[in-house]
Structure formats: structure tokens, C-alpha cells
Amino acid sequence: MSDIPASPADFTTAWLEQVLGAPAGSLAGFDSEAIGTGQIADSFRIQLRWDAPVTGLPDSLVAKCPSPDETSLASARLMNLYVKEVSWYQQLAGRSSVCAPACYFGALNDAGDQFVLLLEDCAPARQGDQLAGADLPALRAALEEAARLHAPFLNEPGFETLEWLRIDPEMAAMRKQFIAQFWPAFRERYQDRLATELFEMGDSFVSAVMARDDPEPQLLSVAHGDFRIDNMLFGRSDGRAVILDWQTLYPGHPLTDVSYLIGTSVAEPEQRRSVEEELVGFYCAQMESLGAPLDWQEAWTAYRLYASSGFVMAITASMLAQRTDRGDEMFAVMAERPAQQMIDLDTLALL
Image 1 (cartoon, rainbow, N blue to C red):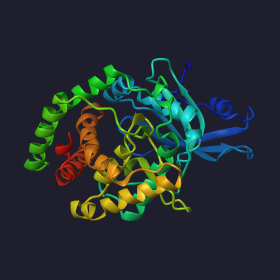
Image 2: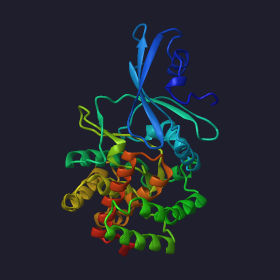
Image 3: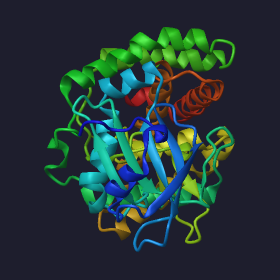
Image 4: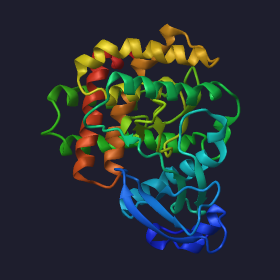
């Protein structure tokens, strides 16, 4: 699609009427305000002022648009981040019962660096806070949604061959090189923020990753890829977590999302140690209830192995996204918590 508006400043009432399927002249006007803390894309709440109520259309929605930052835009183009999010809503969301915003409209340009999504406004649900961390009820709510995402696609043949979702060997090799390429810069940026033992573990981890061939996961499903509480909304009346930001989807082991969530979202290591086995068991029970049972021991081993997922994301995303004060601290926390998780679970022994 050409002429995709880059932000609400480029929206018009006529365009909104057209894409929402509203009668011409029915939208008197609209207001917008920035919301969220996205690093790669920007989100806005759009308040719609209808001349009269329009059946089936909301009074407010959320518009998601490209970041104006060139670093973030280049990263989105390189890794097909906008392509994945629009394609998720258009092709896969309907096959899963995961709680995600309803999509009213989505469009993407051929280059994959301009897009717009008009999504359900899930207020009064509130965004989770990565820095503060999550409590046990929030983690359970998130894991229920992880199971709802993973179960329908568990080892289902075909989904991983979708052009926009499949793992490109060249892209996989590039992502692996990013770890080694960005690690020195990450160390320099956070040398005064993170403990020496975490950097020592990171040195060993990077060396081990670069020396090994990546094995195929024993289980395969659609993995979210950035399954942390900053990408979730909490506070719905039914207690469910709303899962946002579908830009990092990939075919992967479902325990990747589980380990990533727990590792990045529990603020205190002692608390994480005390609940992680229970939470992995809770997730396995949810998968079984959805007709996708997992072997507990295999799930626990995978949980230990994929504790590295949050650490890797912190290294790479911190160097590819627009830099902000909150972003710097968020990526520090995203490295710190999973790094300790890796040490506690002896993840390096599984590589």
C-alpha cells in the first residue's frame, strides 16, 4: 500500500472513515496522544468524535506507527519487524486464543519500513513495568497467554515456512554475529552498572555461542520473542493479560518465551529462584489443558537452556534501538536478571 500515514499527524477524518468502514462524513474529528514506551515503534491513543454512534466502531483506538528514529527504523527494516507485526494480525492471530488487541486495520509498504495498525484500545488495562518487575499473579496470567499462543502451533507443520515468519539461515547467522559484534559495546556502556561476575559469565557465554553449531529445537511453535511485561497490559476485569508487540515472532521452542518472561520480569533473584519451578509446572499444566502436553523434565531442561534468551535480547536490542534513559536502564535490567538466572541454572553447561 502506498501513502501510508507515518503518524496521527498525517491522519485525516476521511482516511479514518475509509479504513474503518465508516460512512463518509460520520467522523467529526479526532484527537491523539502518545502512549507506551516502545523502542522500535510509536503508539498513540486516538479519540474519535463521531457525529452519531456508529455500530461496531469504537470511540477510541490505538494507532501503531513507525519510529521516527533512523536507528530503530533501520533495525525494523533489516529484521522485518514491522512485516511480522502486521502479518501476525492479518494471518495468524485468528488461529490462536491468546489475548491480543483486536485489529481494525493494518497496512505495510513493500520495503517493510512504513506501516500502520489500528488496534483495540484495551484501557483501563495498564502496561506492565519492566523496571519494577512482576508479581506472581501477573506472571501466571502471562503464562496462561503463552500457552494459548504456543499450543495451537506446537509442532504443527507448515507455519514455519510462511515467508515472513520462517528462519532465514543468513538472518540467523547475522543474529549470531550480532552477539559477538555488540558484546564489547554493551560491556563498555554498562561497565559501571552491572556486576563483574555477570560480565565474566557473558564473556564465557559469547565464546561458547560462537563456537557451537545451533541445534534445531526439539519442539517448535510460534514464539513471541519478546515476551516480557513491558509488552503486556494488566488489569482487565477477567484477569487476563493482553499481549502486545508482535514484531519479534519466530519459529522457536515454546520454553524460550517462558524462560524469557520469568528471567526478565522477576525483580529479585531470590524470589525468582523460589517460584520458577512452580511457574514452569503451571505453564506445562496450561499446555496440557489445551491439548499440547509437555514432558516436565524436558521442559525444565529447555527452561534452563533458554535462560540465555533475555540476555541475548539485551545485548542486541540495546545496540539496535533508539537510545533513551529509560531504555538504557531497561536493557541493563534485561541483561542483569537473566544473567543471574543463567548462573543459577548453570545454563552454560547445557551449551
